[in-house]
Image 1 (cartoon, rainbow over the protein chains, first blue to last red):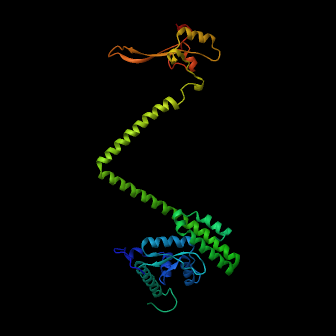
Image 2: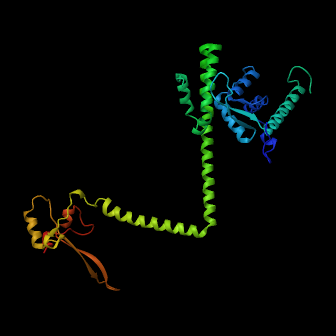
Image 3: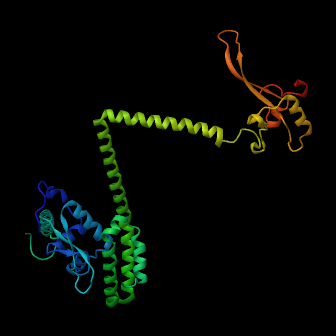
Length: 125
Length: 219
């Protein structure tokens, strides 16, 4: 991951994130992926519960790239078995910080839900 | 190059709902991704799975294409606004150049407007009479002197009126400047027209006030 530019916006400006945007950052936290890879990773992680359709995905990628949360890696032949060049994306340092902040925010909400016995299982914390 | 399937052709038609810039950046990948997903859905769930995928694609396009177009339009409008602001700032910084440019434009526009007004009223607009295409001016000639538009004498005009059969009517007109004396003030030069008694009749119009000329008014 690369360092983002000096004087970048604060993390708080991006919170709370939409579910789609957070799913994309979550998928890229594991390493660079192209658009189809992000789609498959989200489906795998959510057990098929969340499907990112192409229009939703690529518009969100444009928004996140425009905000400096992720960046494109120059095109390279990464799709084994297909002679097709794809555009890979990776998180920037700002993107990683924002993803962490959003995860903490959601964790705090889950903790509050547990404290009110909204979730089965272990007690608050 | 592999041939496009009907499904891909349909997908490319749907993609046209997105703005051109978005299609250029992502269209290829979107088509390839969807092709793979259709293939997976077919082997996993058969036709129902493929149809579900297509339904999702149509809904996805309906949801995302309009805001994408709006965002692209707004970006273009913002860019134009910035360009205009920059242009105005540049003009303000160079007042002498701006003054010369504005003056040149004003002269050019003024001259063009004047010329077009003349061309419009003289050449382009039809004469304000009924059947203006039926009106002709008949001139005499003086070949020895090389004159092609020579006025006719009154006797010649009367001969034409008596013997010409190809015209519904013949009228004569001669214009000349004449001083007009008012009760008070300086005399004024006006353009006067001397006409035959049937002048308005040949043109197909009537005087706005008063009566038309009669044969006995002619001399």
